[in-house]
Structure formats: structure tokens, C-alpha cells
Amino acid sequence: MELGVFSFGDRARDPHTGSPVPVGERLRQVIEQIRFADEVGIDFFGLGERHRPEFAISAPTTMLAAAASVTSRIKLTSAVTVLSAEDPVRVYQQFATIDQLSGGRAEIIAGRGSFVEAFALFGAPLGEYDALFDEKLAMLRTIDAGNPVTWSGRFHTPLDNVDVLPRAHGTPEAPGRLPIWVGTGGNPRSAAVTGALGLPIIYGIIGGGVARFLPLVDLYRQSGAQAGHDRAALKVGISAAGLILDDGDTAREALFPHYMDVVSQVSRERGSAAPDRAFFDQSAAPDGSLLVGSPDEVVAKIRAVHEIFGNTRIGMQLDFGGIDPALTKRSIELLATEVLPRVRDLTTPTTTPEPTTIEGAHL
Image (cartoon, rainbow, N blue to C red):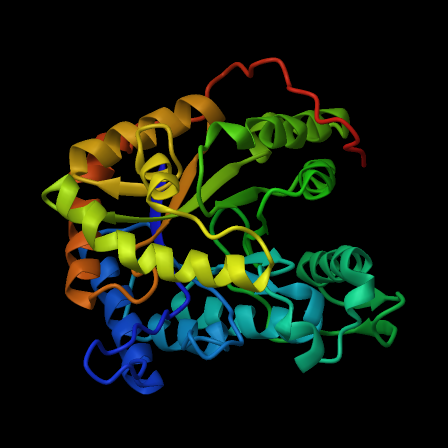
């Protein structure tokens, strides 16, 4: 099992002034968190992309390059790269550069994004939501396969026998290649298509119970098997917010106001009912998605999640809503010293439960 941390650079508001933490200060805090995570032995650190004032990170590749210069072993990944609004050539070059700089520690998690601001900013037609992602993911994979590159599609100028440079450093298992995952929030089409491509997938779960995602994981694996992909290649990751402190109740009370602020704002913007304390408590319960509590509680939850999904990776956002950096640092320390050693031996089960059918899902 790989355990990691991710961040969007959430900017908390000063309780006295009401102003958010300055962007520069917040960016430096995140770099320090990555450096510390590397020092204590966390497996990976992911940075997400947001184009909103409540977040400090809109250019995660710049931040990952900075992180590469202060770390030595931790994997550095996006969480996610909004590929639909990006140029795959530039995305590859940026991550290949980070990969070379870090000695083969860069990864891409490609996704459509939780928000749509990037589409207008970068001139991507929102009405082509699925087609953009499908084509750009195919183009990115073609570039990653090696030079020279020949490509033709709807959304990019054709490439004819060109070299895309630099090439990735890669790993001993896959020299010259970048690991490419697909991140999704729970769309059946994403599960089916990603499985058919044989790419690893990461599910971002914001709240509620985790078991409701099992039909999607089953669909992903079923689609992969039908396409002839080996089960070992069909890796599943789970990402969720959380907080680990020495006392579980303290962790839940520290996370609660930040979680409610963020989720309530998103609910208002999307015209849905705002969550209440009962929803938070359900999400923080043993069968809920929030990875919050004492080390013992989080270990138990990670083991329970693994029993459901057979996942090989878990990512935790430990600064949700701009939690006090001191609490985030303590969470990272406990994740490395108290949690990771106790779940390291978890591996994908050798058998898979019968898939659950999702009505209307198709390739």
C-alpha cells in the first residue's frame, strides 16, 4: 500500500482580519509540507490545480519543480492535471522536466477537474467536455510512448514525425516513461473508459460512505478485463480529506469547521442542499470517507477501505480548507510513523468480488 498526501493550497481566512493567507506564504507552507513528507518517508505528494481565489495553487507543475529541488525520494504527482483544458505536448514537457530534475519521481494524474474555470481561461469548449479529455489523453499517451510523434485529432494541430523533448527519465521498470493515472470523482463512463484503456485510476471521494463507489471500481475492473488487460495493471487509488492527530475527537473537531466551509460553499454554487453536522459525522464514521481520527482509527479505516476496493494507494488531503499548518505537519508525521508501517503490507487481493452492475454504464 502506498500512502500519500495531496494539497490544493487551500487558503484559510485569518479569524481576526477575515483576509485569506497571502498566496506566497501559503505556497511556501506547501513546499515545506512536501519537504517534511519526504523526510519522514511518505510515498507520494500530489498537488491539485484550482483557478479560484480560495486556493493558492493554479500552476502545480511549477510547485512540483520547486518540490523536486528540496526532496530526494518522494513521488511528485498532480492531483489532478485538468487535461481537457491543457496542451498535451506542454503537459508532457513539463512533467518530463520534473521527472528529469527529480530522477524519475514525477507522475501525472489526468482528469477533467472538479471545477470548470480552466475551460474558459484556456479557451477549451466546455460543450466538448468528454471528447476533449478522451482525445487529449490519447495524445498524451502517444507522446509518452516515444519519439518521433505523429498525431492528428480535432483539438490540436497535427504533429508529423516530430520529437517532443525532453523525454522522461522514467524508472527501472519503465525507462523513459511517465506514470499516467486517471482521476475521477465517480463518473461511470470514466470508470469504463479508463478500465478499457488499462490505465490506473484514482477516485476522489469528498464525503458520505465509501462503499457507494464499489460498483464503479467493479465496472472499471470488468471493463479492463474485457479489454484483455492484466489485473495487476488495473490499479485503484482512493483520495479523501482527513486529519490524523493523537486524539481522534480532537482531529474531528479540528477538521469540522474547515470541511463545512468548503463543502457548504460548493453546495451553494451547485444549487444543492448544504451539509450539516450529521453529514460530517456520517462521513467521519468508520464506514465514511473522511480519513480522520487517531492513528488507530485511521489504520482501521484504511484496512476497511482496502477490504472493499482492493486498492493499492490512498491519498489524504491533510490541509483541507486551510487547516493550521502545525496540525497538518503533525498529521504527516503520524501518517509516516504510526499509520504507514501498519498498512504497508496491504496488497491487491487475488480474487475479485462479482462486479456490481451500474445501469446505463457503457464504454
